[in-house]
Amino acid sequence: MNRGRLFVLLGVAWLAAGAVCLAKSNSAVVSIPFGLAGLFFVGWSIVRAAWDADWGRSASALEREQSAFERKRVNMLQLGIIGFGGMAGEHHRELKGYDRVSVKGIYDIDPAREADAAREGLVVYESREALLEDPAIDIVLVATTNEVHKEICIDALEHGKHVICEKPVTMDAAELEEIIAVAKRTGKVFTVNQNRRTNCDFVLMRRQVEAGLLGEVYQLESAVEGSRGMPDGWRNIKSLGGGMLLDWGVHLIDQLMYMYADKKVTSVYCRMESVHYPEIDDNFELVMTFQDGPTGCVRVGTNDFITHPRWHVMGKNGTLEIADWDCNGKVIRSLYDEKAWANEIVMTKAGPTKTMAPRNAASVETIDLHYPEDVRDNLLVVYDGLVDAISGTGELWVKPEEALRVMRVIDAAFQSAENNEVVKTDI
Ligand SMILES: NC(=O)c1ccc[n+]([C@@H]2O[C@H](COP(=O)([O-])OP(=O)(O)OC[C@H]3O[C@@H](n4cnc5c(N)ncnc54)[C@H](O)[C@@H]3O)[C@@H](O)[C@H]2O)c1
Image 1 (cartoon, rainbow, N blue to C red):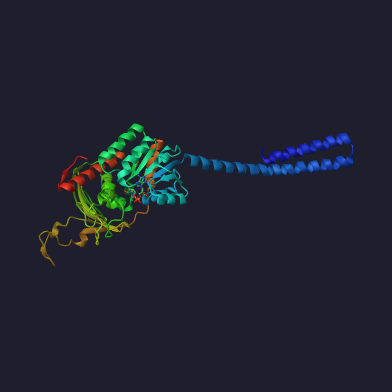
Image 2 (cartoon, rainbow, N blue to C red):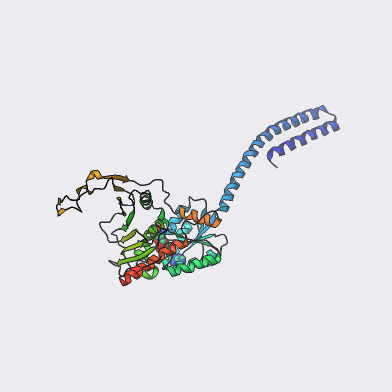
């Protein structure tokens, strides 16, 4: 009962007591003050009741709000993280502002990482089994070193969890096929964090190509380079899934295959260098050919003091260059076919040339490119797809079969580098 109703009842009871008192004592000395007090109480109770009714309304609005929040919280899927290192920390940071998935707890083999998680207020499970057996966990993020991705993904799926695995999803395509088979058998959703599909430099490049600014594109060069060498730790150890092809290559290959999803990869050629780290590829160059074009050239270097542009894309009518992740770039495209000078010999510092002479500036236009502020470049895009697929309201943003195609290209690249050969593919 709310307070308003209680006070009205008390007032009526007081009035009734006054009436009984009057009937019994027949004494105005007792009954008049008692009756006045009763009337005052009723009046005051009515005022209180009105106040409380309002109060009651706002209280129930508050209750409604609270229960909506509770419902939302209950509806949020709970995530358990296995491997709480640098990248898992990034997931945790981004998920803090997300209303569809919340991080419940973690398991890591390193006590220091467990202490980090405890400081963040997360549950720290004593074993992987304990995390996987928690019925409150809906989704498992696998963010360990690469060599154990397969084993942990399969374990999580067998425990009835949906799984998101960090890239590279596995060490090779055969391992991924095993995971996909288990996901199909258990009916659980499985995806891979190929998050660089949202990167602004990639989206900006793709928009220009798809808007037809360059005409028909026949070659895309995608480079990520630095000169600081490899970071310490597992990335230098082959058996743990180290090396640049698996680390960065998987992103750059995925971007191109995502862009040309309807085209098969018909050949792969890859050269690897081990400049400072003998056990792994700390640099590589890869050429992949899509059926009926274009050619994709991927270059990753950890010992490059003067870097190539992030993107250099050539079409029949123009060229695009994006220098860096800040998206400084431009498109230069032809306004008309400049064959007029074809017979003219142009003198350059390197001698006479017709073909390679600078072009007449009036025959081209330059379009400056800038950082596309409208692009949603974060991990939550992958989580949106995952939650949609779990709830049956939409599709995964990164499908396992797409990751499988990328891993097949990576397998072909290792084979190519080992044998110094072009590997014909049908991927
Ligand atoms: N998507 C991206 O942009 C991106 C960026 C960086 C890293 N990654 C990927 O994320 C994964 C982790 O990379 P990182 O940079 O966070 O490495 P990291 O070394 O910082 O973290 C790995 C963590 O896994 C833990 N671990 C290893 N084996 C384990 C096991 N069997 N059980 C539980 N915990 C275990 C380690 O103790 C460590 O805390 C790798 O697959 C990496 O390729 C992805």
